[in-house]
Amino acid sequence: MPVPSLRRARRRRPRWNTVAEEAQVLGVARTLTSATRLLDVMRLLPPQDGIGVSYTINPGSAFADGLAEYFTGRGGRLLSWREATRRSFDLAVACAVHPSMRRLDAPLMVMPHGAGYNRLVVESTGEPGVPAGLSRRELTRWGRVLPAVIGVSHADQIGRLRQTCPRAVPRAQLIGDYCWERITDSLGRRDLYRAGMGVGAGRRLVVINSTWSEHSLLGRHPDLPLKLVTALPADEFAVALVLHPNVWIRHSRQRVFARLRREMDAGLLVLPPEEGWRAALIASDWVVGDHGSTTFYAAGLERVLLLAATGLDELDPASPTADFGRSAERLDPDGDLLDQLLTAAEKHAPESLQEIFDRQVGVRGTAGRRHQEAMYPFFARRNIPLPTDPPEPDPVPAPRPERTPGPTTYEVAGEVLPDGSVALRRWPVAARRPIEEPRGFLAVTDLEVYSVWQATAAVLARTVLDAEPAPADWLHHHIQDSSAGLDVAVAALDDDRALLLLRRGGILLEAHAPQSWGEPRPRLDPLLLGAAVNVWLDAARTAEELTERGLVVRTGSRALKVSFTAPP
Image (cartoon, rainbow, N blue to C red):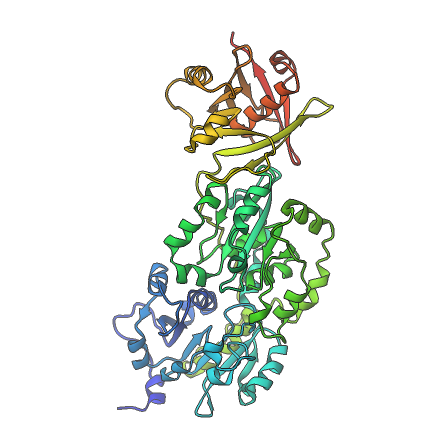
């Protein structure tokens, strides 16, 4: 039997291969977080270079559930750990190091699976003050350094490594942060990503980010997503949630969605753990977060930032992320959330956090090339040279947030302005959550199932087109049979048309939002329309004035012109 080095040196052209795979690389994952990073890095090894890629799951992590399905669902070639340890590879790449990886017959390259090395995980390191990824226990075995390459995102991490595991320093290599590079490659697609999040027409996006553990945003303030989504006017703000993959793995996808049901019914968008968080960050205007990498990257994007948890209890005090937690603006979860967001935007000084970000993510714009320069020397024996040109920009995919049909009940407040327009604000109402301090009247859609809100609503809207009975019949039925509190009923006729029935005088009107020259076709939300007309009538204005002059409905910076006609 040939020795392993000679075995690796053989040319790999099995007769059943359609194309040659001269070199073999193994991606080694322990968690979903490390798996997503691996797929990023493997994009830097084009198959045209004759490089084959397989994946395996290094056993033992508490966050490994679903990894096999993740790789196979993306078409990856998955090997069992037992099979992987019986084969030889030119290179193994891992984004989380573990001593058991010494069993692999391959030089090992390790790198961070987040923004640098920050978290104190004593279960992995065995040392209370040493961050995961830089500990002697992880990097060495019997005095021998296991990885052939220890990738760092900033040169400062080599100095920290010198303190925690000095003999590993010669293996350290500055490779930058390819995840950050893909984010910056994607900045020109902000409008595309905002469209994927349903953010347009003057709405702004607030992204909530929570890492895992009891020290995270969700661990400290589990009700904050619901508070935010019901505190912000829905026509001016959208709210999305990014959870660390460990939250999904530890608590199961089914239970996470069950926990977030009320929040999603109130309009919360939830990004899946596999992909979408980077696009959501690019699309965002504010980020409310903690010490997770997603929040840290938001500082690099100069987003308006507020921390609801710092995580300092589980961070290496010498890490830039700990400095970030000590320096970033705080959010008071029990305070006026809208006022805090607006105040933070007014005071926003992104340069205050940029120096901290710069100490974590170095060699900007060259991370992809540096990753290749770290990996390709292991393929030299296969006569595979480093590509002549650096890797091309690689934008991240558009987000696909999980969502429900959206809020079915709103609190509405508004006024008729001096110019005759109606300014409105709507706040989603969560099912079975008592309204302690009413902000206005209730407007509900016909999809609302909570009878208390139906019985007390001033406005009712049917949102489904081509429904039965006919729109006029449906309106008369609900106005006549409802309690005295219902003043306006609306039925959608098309995306830009609706039929209204006013209790006062039994007046029937058709509303239309005309398209202005050079502008997209407007969407006429029937519930918003009904609420605006209700405010108009409460201000002692008349239906006749609507047909004569029309109405301008204002929500934040957006103005929607609506015309009205009476039946012939």
